[in-house]
Length: 113
Length: 115
Image (cartoon, rainbow over all chains, first blue to last red):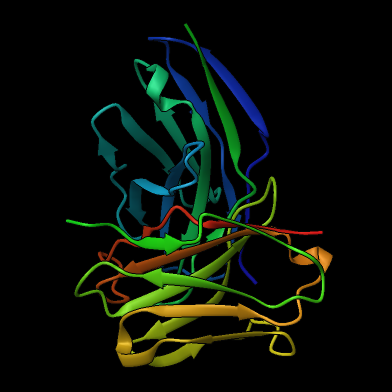
């Protein structure tokens, strides 16, 4: 079974600094998709960024970028120029085809002003 | 565009009572998901619908949980009877389909407390 592990329960960063959230996963498949979701206190999960496993180029969305290391089964999220509104729980997720999203345990990100 | 709507936002009941949650997906979204999120954990899929058909309900505890999606639009998730361990957030999500590019949009969830 696929598993997703986020080893950092909590992270904090100064406003305007850069922070990296870690994620590793376990799968025997070669074709799959990876996601980072943000969950603010309002509880509504919001898609931040996604990556197709067959693409070597790392995905980027404005201040958010990923470091996808397929051989190492690692998928980290980098947030540049951190803003107060980035404070939230961040979940890494795996999905193969039409199958369900498998989420990690989450990392709580705090932004210090 | 309206997002995924869920109600109620909060529900407190005593154990052994029944409870129901309602979800209205984004208009035109054929796929609907119910997730369970325990405190401090990531969401786990309970059931997935393609239109009216439940295509993945392997994680749904069928002895006490039931779900329906009449006419392929709104959906309800029911627990009867509720147990203390059912206290959690129940999230609904929807997507156009199940292609990789079909983003899952989540609702705000219902926080259930069973006393």
